[in-house]
Length: 445
Image (cartoon, rainbow, N blue to C red):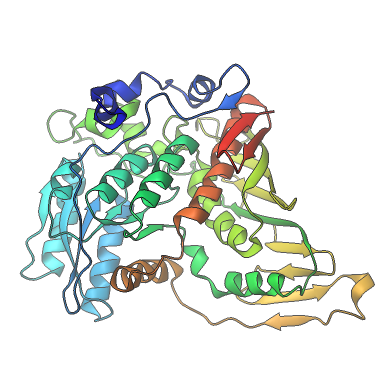
């Protein structure tokens, strides 16, 4: 019997044995005697039947399923149906999966009212959706701890995948998804980090390659916002939610169950370290992804971070975080995140000969003092593309047609997840972490 067919490889119970009940315990569980972070003894494997899949033919609508119909999943459904209504793409939302009946019903009502004559499947079990050979693609908009399994299963079932950010909750899951994407090179895979679509980052990448700022020495970016009532508390709690009646709580928990019903966790899971890396995975991935793309500095090789509870003491995840990430070529990136103060760092790349300012829409290159006679100040103007999230969605849809690689692809997302996961571990245990790009393994320093 192969590893993939072992029963424990295909059940939540089997996977659960190898996970702790907190992020810190989970990190300790994968640390060996030498301090090496390795994959869990049982990796995430597909839990669905393998299917070949096919791209839509010319003139055929792209048939899309949504897994996870909370705010983000329903938002994707509306945006894509708007594309269809405006004639920007020929598509249909044909299936919805979510363990919460209320959320699924709300999305189903929207899809049936906006799509005349389209039969929209509605089910608690996402695997029922993946059995369908007429579905071309899947949007994974479930909570972070489900991203990896949903993406792997969708790829195995022959579907193209748009996976919400962060790509996964943990680094070992990211490597599982990476293996699945590489196993299925005919599939289109996109991660929902929309700032990669901003033209300034493509221009910045080319300017660095052209030597306009000299060697890129270090960079900085941030994602900061403020709240009087606590970040993510704006997600409402419905008193009518009843596990076992109109909500499958155990299915929602998956590998992180069983545990007692907690409506706060269900509605505001980003605040809890078992279910999310908080600011890092939910916010900072947006700014890290395009900057890592622009720098083209290789894999992160050393990560250290700190986190604090300064204002929102009720939130389990930190409300202030600071990261330092070093890359293969030696470049260092400084990243700040806050949900207690909205004033962040200016996004910029410091080169030996000039500095590159990226806070606005354009790329502003200013020479270092000692190189003012050798380097001219230059502004590279960039077009206004409108809503960058819509542009990322359209990029995925266009790639489903063309079969070209999507903008926010697996290689870029894998590098981002190294920084995300190792920064989170560093915050909780106080250690620095190293990553070996050859072995794709991390170790505690």
